[in-house]
Length: 353
Image (cartoon, rainbow, N blue to C red):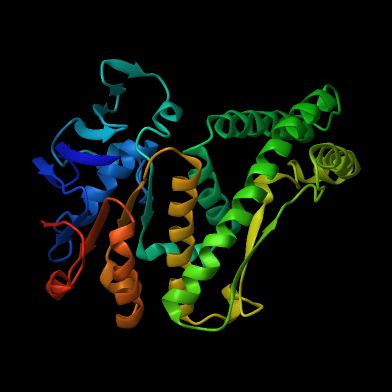
């Protein structure tokens, strides 16, 4: 798969713009605050239905306009396809070919990809929610059932929390049964994903850093550590029942996939506490490389790779090692403020914006 073109109207700082891309490397170069990241943001919107920046959809509308429109032409399985996304404060419309998509979840998997930004260092040193989202985004792009169970889980948890706040156990067992059924699927898929990521991330981290210290990922579920579905269900339901009195006091569910985390170690030491800034950024690069490999392995297509501000994410040596890998990563989008980056010797078709 590759993105052929992108049309923007009243999107962020762009009043109107059209871009045609290379199927290989696309380098977006220029000073800060000129709209480089906005191009990646528009692609991300078509992938997941939201920006990777902490903003509301209405904030994407160009100043002075009352709506925005984004259209992409992409080739998938040898067939050209179109995807349109328009938004105003009263209506959101998403059209794939001539079919209207009624939910953002229907976007998932149409354009698969991975994005890496400077803020992603928080994958290592930030809150567990960031690492859960990292898992959810990549699994959701290749497993529609995961989205189904994640939605069921969140709904059941909200209902259970409401009963806990009301200090009543009436019908709580029904919601706990629903919660457990969904939670088991989520935990199984997350565990498999982390195990697969480990196979890709470890070797890439060693290549990128030229260090002997090993990168290790450990999935830390909150709810059950069972080795199969039945064990997980039994352990989790027992935990929910055991914690009811305490949870009634606080008013919310204390354990489950909404509390999961990934422990990240470098050389056997927790990366959040002991890794240097360079090691943490290299770890993030390895995580996203593993994410890209995981998407490629589990889907029948080659995902996009987007790297925002590649010049500040890694030092010179590690950046060069990353560049050496670009030829094997399908269609790549890089933004940079460094014009010398364009001089890099890359054996891949390249287009510069």
